Amino acid sequence: MSLRPQVIQLYKNLLYLGREYPMGYEYFREKLKRSFLKNKDATDPEQIKMMIGRGEFVIKEIEALYMLRKYRTLKRRYYDNEYGNRAGKDTQ
Image (tube, helix red, strand yellow):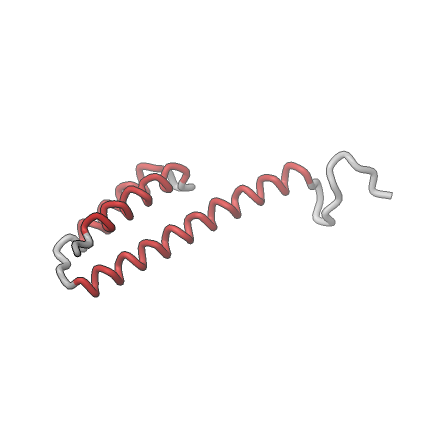
């Protein structure tokens, strides 16, 4: 079984997730491209599976980064101080 389709799908998934990367899509895309090109000559299936696993870990980390950013935005929007009081509520 060829691992090529899995590698291509991993690349596509990472490109999709890179759209909202904090340092910009262009930065993310170039870094991703360099990473994949650096390993383009790998032929050992076990090594390729290990790299795919690392890529899937990176996907989970990026998703966690986005969820944290979303959480912080919502918290900032609805809670106005360090005590966690809701914005617009009296603090009696």
